Image 1 (cartoon, rainbow, N blue to C red):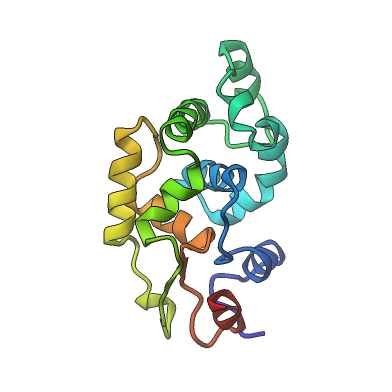
Image 2 (cartoon, one colour):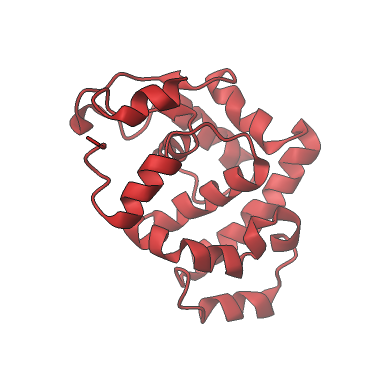
Length: 186
């Protein structure tokens, strides 16, 4: 399989082949990806993939309601957990983002409908020939970032949100030479 060039390890290849670019409409999964993409800031995606199960365990399988109730004692426990990125700002942003997500869901009905509205409810189909062609951010990711920040989300800059859009299939950025491009387009 001629995968996209970034999928070079066993973890990243499996993630590429099974998940990256597949449209997701599940609020829990979308919240997980917001958290993981934010945690990745300044680190490699491989690091986050290795810690993903640790994140799922530490953050109650990304149950938004439960995370929103985490207190100072829970934060201290998370800061000592080697299975996640032990950065206070990233940990507290996860809790703040859960609270913001609850408010957003109360206002809009669901996380997925709100987030997918930035791409008119359907995946954008790109036709990149090489990795250098992929943008770091787009007008849509900038608009999403601005809107989420206004609603109280953190670690949701335009570049992070573009990576989120790629991961959750809002945009198909598999190279045209990659077999997953066609699979994610249908």
